Length: 90
Image (cartoon, rainbow, N blue to C red; front, side):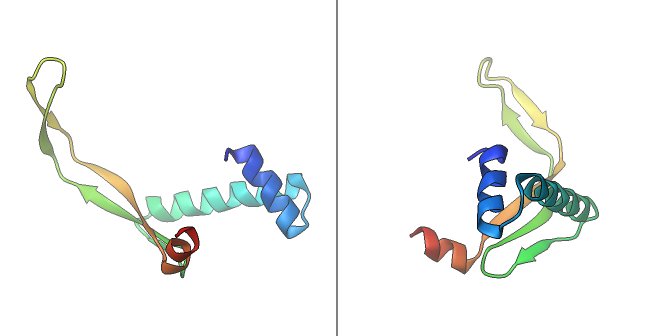
């Protein structure tokens, strides 16, 4: 499902126009992005949890040459499915 299909599905389920659903989805993405940038986590009980974690620097290997390389540390987003979502897809 791409963004257009998601917006159309949201509009039909919520009785919003496609423009309103698109605006709501954009607002949701902006709020989630801002919260994660600030180091907060997002929890929608029964659906999902998003949080930021620090991944430490580590050693890797260039698959083409076999040369050892250092992979720099970075912040990553961790996703954990909630019980409601997990049971719905079983």
